[in-house]
Length: 100
Image (cartoon, rainbow, N blue to C red; front, side, top):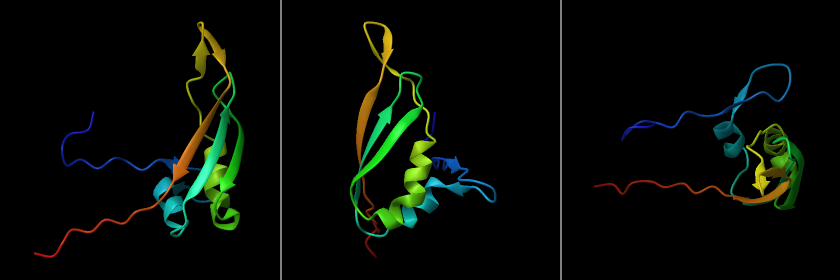
């Protein structure tokens, strides 16, 4: 559990041979336009499909690839694993403290 003032560690993503990137790096490359994404999680917890519903597909490519590599605890119905769809709005907002 994080304590007050501790920084949340960045998730590291390996998109292929070479240097890993962090999710923060991927998000920084998106620019200002938000993305709306559907992710289908299979019964085994793997991601079976990622669909960009709204946003710039050119800038979203590396982030979508990272989302395809995610793993989840599968959804359950009556105790049995089921496939589920997750909808995510990925947006960036820069917040700065006022100068005092």
